[in-house]
Image (cartoon, rainbow, N blue to C red; front, side, top):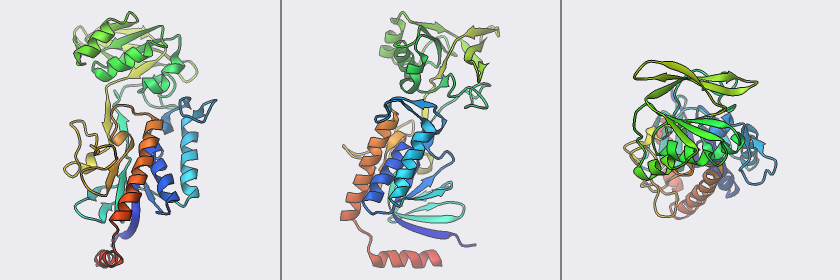
Length: 332
């Protein structure tokens, strides 16, 4: 059975703050963008409760409500949405080709806003509410959620630079931060280790894994069950918040071998733009930002990507003849 073919001037992969901001700007430029949503429409803010650091909301706003506002604004300007999973991508020539289970999507320009996913431990109590305590005492972003833990003892899980950055930042709010690490030495860079070791509010528990996060929906987090990996001894360690800091994984696997990316998988962009190594392909948000990872910075780069795509289309249009050839090939 032949797949339906969709041809758009601008296709945006991802519907978090970066993707939806790109859609708003592209739609207002009359480019009629298509947003292809993956398995988690709205991105990580859909599993975030209160958002108090996004400008324009003096009393804060719930993450899912904020993303609904983004979506409705994009829809107001005639953005189209398609909820599906892209299984293949061919960026060897324009228009670029994306393949889903039911569609072939042709894109004159492609904006990748597929985000990054926090790496989790996969332990009981970690999942988002209501299944677990995620968003109710469990977080993977200190700069997003640290303020909510003012005056509380906290646990940070991890031993790399991310964990040390999170632990150090959280000391601004917490009564104390305990870093739980599986090994007897940190993997973090020396400068980050020294900074953490010198901080009187940071303690360490070595050779230990977090086996379970304890608490309830009513109380939030009350403790963690720890296991010493050398002795096998288990104990309950009281805490009122757990930050998982074992890094993030950008959702860019689809483009390996086609787009330049770093060792982790973050897409590389050129100069002071969102352009990738392939002309007409742009990257924004957490798919290319392993440093800030904030909704507001993601939205900013989404705006940049849409403007970059609009300017690219202005100077590199696909002719009507080429479009017709492409339609004929798709119909065969």
